Length: 600
Image (cartoon, rainbow, N blue to C red; front, side, top):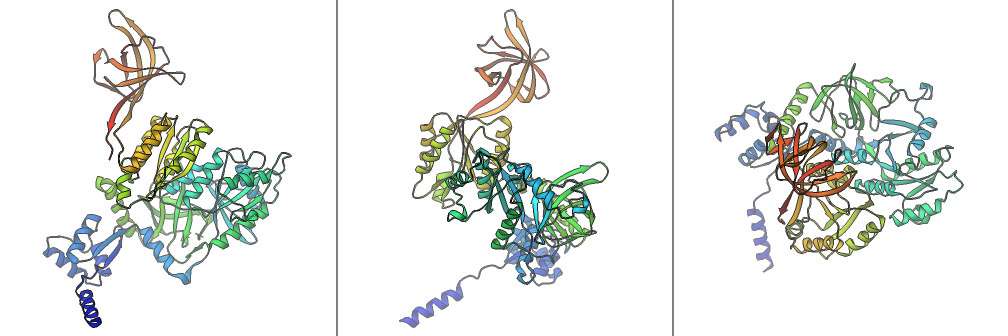
């Protein structure tokens, strides 16, 4: 009996279809390179495809559509990957060539808690070359030495920059230094910094600053950090803390030691022997030198004369400058360097990859440009919404709903932070990744985009620009004024019974410059359309000194004495408002549509 079962199992395994082999090709690869991966002659592959109706030459480029079609004919899977991913996997696969690289550190925290002063204290006490007389050229990053080991600091202008890089898939930072003032403690931007670092999965070192002040209370700060989920090492946790005074340069050496210690624990490594890879931190167009970009090298070593690609830009390294403006011949892992030689200005967050030759660079850029030009190739990221939450739960796609909460007052924030997690079910846990008072910002959108979160606004409303960014990033914003409506929507979304919602779509904004009182017609506002467009019969609100003084509809819309359906940005028009005669010069008229959006 046992033998029969074994025989049947062996026969079933033998008859089972074998999994198709998967071939990975870098973007811009040709049919010749595919043949090499399949260990076949290029001509044989070309002839086989020609018989199936594919008129491809051995040097023709393969895009994603062709890859899928060719894969079916050749009975294999073909995956096209960015060259940076292919090269990174190659670099990391050779374990023998991996070496410890310097950590890359970002300093974050609340405004006025001493971030800039701390950066200056570190920079002035530990310059790489003290004879240079200080940094002569700001390139957004610099190195310091401690105990003959380098540390790279990224000088970002705020949390938005940190998250913007991560939103583009670029993880640059290894460690975040969280600066908290000992005399003030945790503040809104401190919480924001903690949440951004957590979302990025980056370890945190707490730098408790301003201990020189008489009112400093480091223990109180540590208690507050504990409430935020950061338990300090000396209290039995895993978060390193250092009490410093940036003003008096006290304990700066200890902070640098802790950075190196943490870097050793998390084992930051790179392969210096491969083609250089990195990330663009910032880029600009210099009137004399042309496009310039600051790049932090992550793997490999970059030398003058090498060819590279970055986004849809390519070039040849004409010059490398360090943070002092000094020309260098090459740059290894974790070294920030300004590169001269780009064909055009890249974007912050673009990956940087050295390639073999200009032909390879041209093929990659051609592929990327063609992909960008094809609407099918430009896909917005798909993020969770309350409307499709139930379907995703049923499909097993998500088990956690990430939420960002913004409210008008701290009391509301605290209530929502307690209330929303309590709505969690067996199927899904509601996780608040960031909560703060104030209006919804671009930073919130970017954090939501990279964390696949929804944003809930309570008694706060996003502006037109923020809504535009949210639409671009496919991030859902839900605004509420009544708390039970908010909780009802969450419950219904979890149960799959979310009812259609009324969505406001911003159309445009017009500034009132003159008031005309016309007999038998009424009051007409002479306006200039400053944003979007004004549409006849649209709903409007009149804003005076940031307060809404009227809501209603447009009764008439004219341009050059002609009745029109709409007036676009940068044009003048006359607007008559239904049932409102108290319009004044200086008022702002916002036009919008109210649409019913069905669930799912």
